[in-house]
Each structure stands twice: as C-alpha cells, then as structure tokens.
Length: 300
Image (cartoon, rainbow, N blue to C red; front, side, top):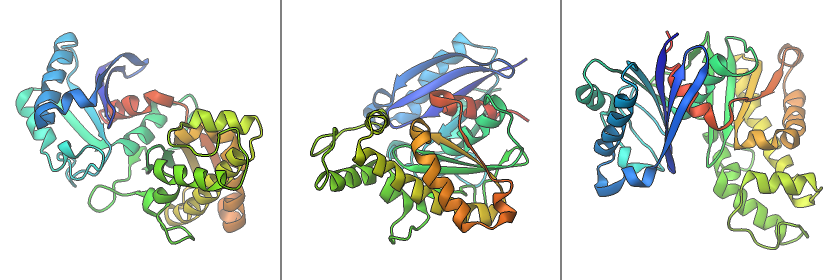
C-alpha cells in the first residue's frame, strides 16, 4: 500500500488528491486556478501550494500531474495550454524536482491521465486496450494499450477533438462547449423549448433535465452529439483496432441519450470484425477522474 499525489490542473481549479494505491482517493483539496495565476507567476505559486501539501503528507514520494494541453516528448515540459497560457512552454518537472529534492514527478495530458485512471480505479474491470473519449469544454481522447498511455511519436497522440467531420469542421468546433451553445441557439430559433429562446450559459445537467422532460431541442442536440462522436469513433476504432470504448467527461451525464445514435453510426460503418466485439461503456470515476488518473501515472 502506497500513497501518491494526483494533481488535476484545470482552467478553473487545481485539484490535489492523496491517493492510496489500493483504496483510491483518500483526501483531496481544491484551489481556484485564478489565485495561482496572480502576478503571472503560476509555476512559483503552484510550487508554494504543493509545498504545503507535502508538509501535510511527507510520506508521498511520487506525484502525477495532468494538464489540459500538450507536453514535450520526454514528458517533462508543457507546450501549449489554450486555456491556461501561463503554463505554456514551461520546464515544469525540472522546476519541481529542483524545488523538492528526492520527490518524483510525472506529467501527462489530462485526458490521457483520466483514461488510465479508469483502468486502475474504475468500478468495472477493463481490458488492457481501450479507447477513451471525454467531452467538456473541448473534446479529448486517449488510447490505453497494454495498460499504458499511447502517446504517439512526439507525446501527444489521440487529439480526437480535431478529427474533421462531414461538415468540414473539427469535432471540437461543433460539440465543444462553444459549438454546442451555437447549435442550441440555432435550434431555438425554430423550435419551442423549455430552454427558452436564447441561451448564453448552460450545463449538461440542464440539457439532460430538458431531455428527460422530452424537450425536442435537447433530444435533438444529444442525437447530434451521438452522430458526430460515432463518426469520429469509426475512424479511431479502425485506426487502432480496439473495440472497447469508454465515454467520460460531461457527456457521461447524457450517456443514455447519446448512446443509441453513437452506436448506430458505429454499427452502420464498421464491419462485423469490429462490431462483434464492440463494447461501449460509461466512465465511472466522475469528477475524480483527473486526480485518480494523474496518480495512476506513478504506477509501474
């Protein structure tokens, strides 16, 4: 039994969890990201925050960190973080190793980390190979192969959100947060809905609640999401020859509405070789996926 830190760095919050290798999440704390961005010294403020956590849990020797962006091939530096530019092109691991001698740090894209967390901490036993897709502000993806994150040639494979759709746009531009807001408002112009006539702020729970009340706009939105996800996954399944798909992120709340149109596209466009063993599952870790996944980066 060992303890690790799992750190999920997001645009809104930094979540730090104490994770037991057998029991899972033991304790967690959350810091608003905006506080660490003060004075443009994110890394310095992050290190100071981490110092407090190491003082609380001196037994922790290894820490996994998930970030919403790309990392260097050697997994030691950040590259591009569209929603957290303060952390762009930073030698994060080198800095933390200098600040905390004797501690070990692992860095990974947050979707990659969350995918790995499902293998070690999810409520269902998973095969050693699966595709993971997550929908939130953007669309993220990962492939776990032989219980390890597939990182590709330079460390940032599986950017499934940037697969081109049949409309000539990237998947993320259509069903990411901004794209869905535009789609919802387009439907509201021509259809009556309990969502109103124009929507500027919404969350998945709002849409799910509307769909449960058989709101035509909400149901149509989920059908569209399922269609686009299905199309992206047809290509992904064929490229990786992996038949297990895990669906996570905010989309997992709407899984029951998205599942049928998504599976229909897959069944119509894949041959029996793929569909005989096709297995689509809902992710089980919820809001703790990032923390647990980051901690799982420490597992050998």
